[in-house]
Structure formats: C-alpha cells, structure tokens
Image 1: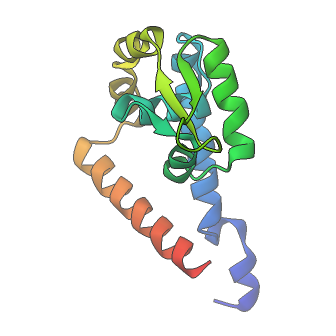
Image 2 (image 1 turned 60 degrees about the horizontal axis):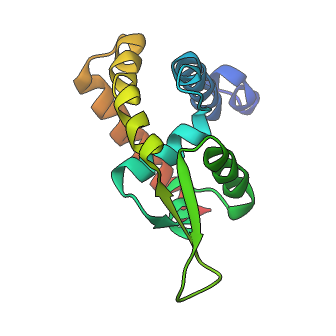
Length: 146
C-alpha cells in the first residue's frame, strides 16, 4: 500500500463512524418527532430518566456537551414542560435539572424506541453489544490521547 492510499476515503476509520452516526440520528428522528423531541434533547431525557435531579455540570459531563450547547437544549425542554431548572440554594452558580410529571410520563412513550432502533439495524443483540463495546473502547482510547 502506497502512502497515497492512506488518503483514500474508503480507508479512513473516521468516515464510516461519521456516516453511521448520521444514519443513526436519522433513524431516531421520526421516532423522536412523535414525542416532540430532537436527538440531543432525547439524550438529555435519557440521563434524567436514569437519574433525576442532576446538575447542568453533571449533564454536560455525561453527554460531553459544554454549557453553551446544553443551556439552549434545557431551555427548550423546559418550555415543552418536560424539565424544570432550579438554582442551588447552597451554590447560586449550580443549576439542578429535574423532570416534571410530563417529563416522567414521556418516558413511557419513549420506551419502544430502543427496540425499534435495534430492529432497524438488522443486527443481533450480541452484535450490537459487541459493536457498542468496541466503539466505547475506541472513544476512550482516542479521548485519552487527545
């Protein structure tokens, strides 16, 4: 393989990851539209359904988003009636995000989404678990070296 070959698109690791990421978001989009959510808003809701009442800082750390990206998402989710933001009494700089009753109820409506996505991939649960582990490992190694 010549050094020129290293610059071929079909040999780049980044491109299939990028294309797969876009395809996954596109697969989620119509399912989430029925709930009135975008994909990034859905990620926020997933964190809150798992652990209600987290700080904006914790949300950012879990989702790898800075506050400049997260704040508009949270404002929109608050406008939709799914979350409530409250300043901490102990530290005015800290804001806690909690689910409203409507946000908790939305979880039931979203429950079928993971299964729909699994079906859409055409992969077995074992293949998906292995793929997720491999992608997570790649992310951790690349993140450490950055």
